[in-house]
Image (cartoon, rainbow, N blue to C red; front, top):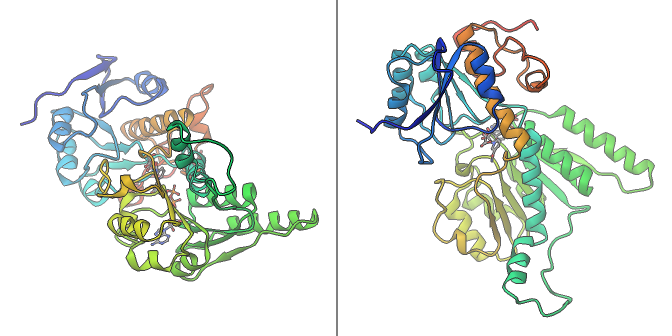
Amino acid sequence: MAKPVSIEVWNPNGKYRVVSTKPMPGTRWINLLIQQDCRVEICTQKKTILSVEEIIALIGDKCDGVIGQLTEDWGETLFSALSRAGGKAFSNMAVGYNNVDVNAATKYGVAVGNTPGVLTETTAELAASLSLSAARRIVEADEFMRAGLYDGWLPHLFVGNLLKGQTVGVIGAGRIGSAYARMMVEGFKMNLIYFDLYQSTRLEKFVTAYGQFLKANGEPPVTWKRASTMDEVLREADVISLHPILDKTTYHLVNKERLAKMKKEAILVNCSRGPVVDEVALVQHLKENPMFRVGLDVFEDEPFMKPGLADMKNAIVVPHIASASKWTREGMATLAALNVLGKIKGYPIWGDPNRVEPFMNEKSPPPAACPSIVNSKALGLPVSKL
Ligand SMILES: NC(=O)c1ccc[n+]([C@@H]2O[C@H](COP(=O)([O-])OP(=O)(O)OC[C@H]3O[C@@H](n4cnc5c(N)ncnc54)[C@H](O)[C@@H]3O)[C@@H](O)[C@H]2O)c1
Ligand SMILES: O=C(O)[C@H](O)CO
């Protein structure tokens, strides 16, 4: 049995007990729950990743809903514990939910929420930052400067890659992949090649229109191509950014064989999930190809890196911070709380989980709906007419 975990309690006399496994940014999410008669319990344990046993202790005997984190293993054991405690709602404070066994949740009648829409641009901006940092060797140059090694301008000092006119490749052109593609096409006048299971007509129209605009202004137009295979992207692109979900079709999508298909001076960025890339193969590839560069926000065995990665000068590594802007993180906390609250109150499901602005407006009460429940169809939950 796990030791009792430390908690902070808000509105102790509230009718519904909602637990958050972590303190989350902002206070709006707490206020929204309190206003609707919830007692909010926040785990303040000084431990980054809670074990299943610790979460069971937090759930206790009576719990209406839980807001959890992507680092936690939400499977059969936790959903049965939540169900025994009378809980009907869980939300990840994340858009990705590969840490959640949705079938197990559905089996116990628990709704599973996630937080799309508020992190699209923030995450795409970090992918763009990593692309630029890798292309222009910004981290290496910063380390060189701080080490006192700079003794004057030199023609060969930290020469990198020009992005303008090169090809950006996107694998997984969903919300974040498309936002990243638009940034790179519009910001740096790169041509686009993308691979996704579905066609992204909006993205294609955007690049076509921007190309026409450039042409009308006497500049070479940008172009787009939807690749029929992922390997086509790997062969043709100069910068490749990964944005698919993690599931069994995308596990080790980028492996030794596929790395070998990429250009020797290509840049690979991963802001999706670590296991999309075979990190051992990547370290070997970085060793053998010093001009190949990567920008990584996510890792196969977080919080650890595979041996050798930290020593590679051609790798930029940051600790899973792609969604870390204040507005986004507060928005994620709000959406997660409203998913749980909405299910407790019996609200219907919001019609379009990508259009979450009405939930973000601090000046008016949020719609009486759950912003995004991924197993709503399986649970037969009604859709909001708002
Ligand atoms: N690093 C971070 O902090 C961070 C932040 C936000 C999201 N993410 C990750 O990014 C993922 C994508 O988020 P999103 O909001 O853009 O999701 P999304 O569902 O809008 O986009 C995912 C896209 O991947 C495509 N896809 C699925 N399987 C594929 C395959 N086998 N090959 C190619 N494409 C495939 C889908 O068709 C879809 O278009 C999340 O699931 C999450 O894991 C990470
Ligand atoms: O899936 C997500 O939302 C991220 O990994 C954290 O923002």
